[in-house]
Image 1 (spheres, helix red, strand yellow):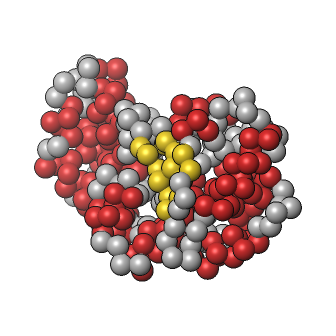
Image 2 (cartoon, rainbow, N blue to C red):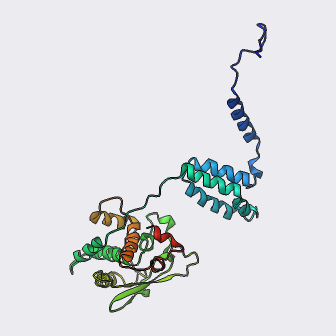
Length: 290
């Protein structure tokens, strides 16, 4: 039915809205009516959060954010974790993974041949920083270490020296060496681990490490940290990556490539998956995906 306006009407002619426009405008009006200061993390609220955020960032990150939200809100809303575990929130997140999910991009593993080439490039007159880089590279590869466990972040504000290995924990053997790792990603309580590197066939990082320790002690016996540059500073991530790019310019290789390459080499040598998981200090079987 059409509604005809009289010519003498004081109201101007207005364009009619579609049903979709009406629903959209009503949603805006209802949203403005919500008092955000008293909004509770109900299953509906968390589900809406998942839907909204997943449209803008990776759904895997949304799942991590939800864990952080629960951690912060639990003292004020004790039921928030139960709400997070409801079927509505789980299904919302699952659906967003299917709709917006993207393939995981992993760095390529370093080849064993590259480590052997680096070892062969070291000679008695090599500079201290060359020895440091070679020792870090071999140690990270053989012990399945993250770059963050061997260096400090470039951002000074987020550095934590409690995570840095110390020179006093080093022990040398006839066929290897060991030192303490105070903290790693899966160690939330700073329980620490003993890192032991032994010779495996032709891969023998001990001579490089001995050379580095000798050079390091000449630079400073007062600096307590294991890894130091010629400037008596702990190497940063940028310092290591700059030198890695000299021997491997392909950007598909990065700090994680040491850990991935070491795990791959252990698998090639016939080590069982549970031994690789233990060597890499993985809290789960995630190492099997490398």
